[in-house]
Length: 501
Image 1 (cartoon, helix red, strand yellow):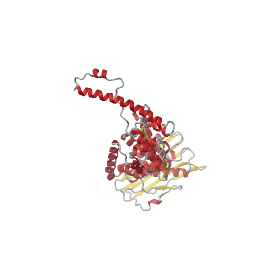
Image 2 (tube, one colour):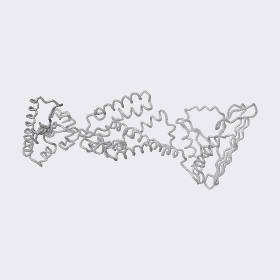
Image 3 (cartoon, one colour):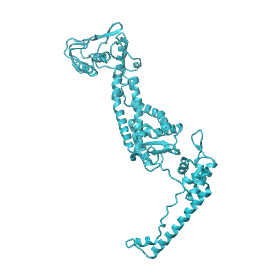
Image 4 (spheres, helix red, strand yellow):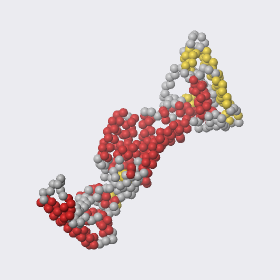
């Protein structure tokens, strides 16, 4: 039997049936689809509970009778005595009310002491008999903390996806905009679909839920099944999280996501289930256990501090990982030509925007266009000559990289210096060398970029850099642009060498 059939057979609300199940009165089996299958025995048990609750039996008394710890006749005898005592108290209370009514008493002139003396010590208003069903006593979780927990989880999964790209593939995330950023969000939601059901199934909470004091279990306190948790996560993403995340990047979805969030918030405030919670045997607990509110426990402030620390880590760690992704794969002494070439090409990819053609450095010092740029037309406003690097090796170790660049233009319009090639060479060759810090290398590269038309000689701890430009008929602008001046000869000559001792 389904839970709907149980409702019809017993007249009990679904929430109360689930409550009695969580209290251990019912033990339905679960089918392959994850739903519970009730039997006629469960119907009989619920009807017995309904009858005894109408008689005023406590759940502890009913449980004792069900387990055989107490005979029902003994429990009925005790309850009858309680009812007789209550009836006597009620009769005295009725007589006292009639006397007060006969005296036409008013509140302002009521002599309460007179009537209290007439009443026996046993006269009191009896506690009302409890309703024949119970309400779920778990404190409803805060809508704001539910939203913040979901947001923190999505931010964490997005951080993990991007950190993987930075650490493994050394991707430059500052170039992830537009469609590429949407792909990042889709990857984060895919990771959420994998990890969140596992977290809920094994621990009853995700990192965000745990830090904000939320716990998600079945109504009997047992963990949600993995398939139930997976279905819940998928529906939450399809209806809520997905629209919210993608709505940030897609303008037309932003209004839809805002409306869905407002509607979901309203339903939680009103105590109504969300779309992905309908007909689910789940219990959202505010605190570590039912009835324990988040702010009533001192440890909750530690959790809140943990949430703030996680947010800070999500915001700060990408900057450190950016430095890692930017650094060459091969560093320090003993660099080979092949390793230098890999460093150079990796740094070129890091600096280039997605889809931009990249000139790949080869081990013989020449450059060739990447294979995926065959359908891309590259237009340059500045003329230039092919750039070649020359490598010097000793016993298989690269000791020097040099470049002799020559360019001559008879027309005399615009030209370009090979500044980018030279700065990439410095970064790929000198990064991580003993005696040279990262900041010192950055300052050296900045000096070359800011003054490309001026000679540069630098040496430190056995490392030497020589940059000798010679311009004729050109004026330098920026880091590499040259503009022709006059009608004379227009020539560019650059001699560059970087060597290590």
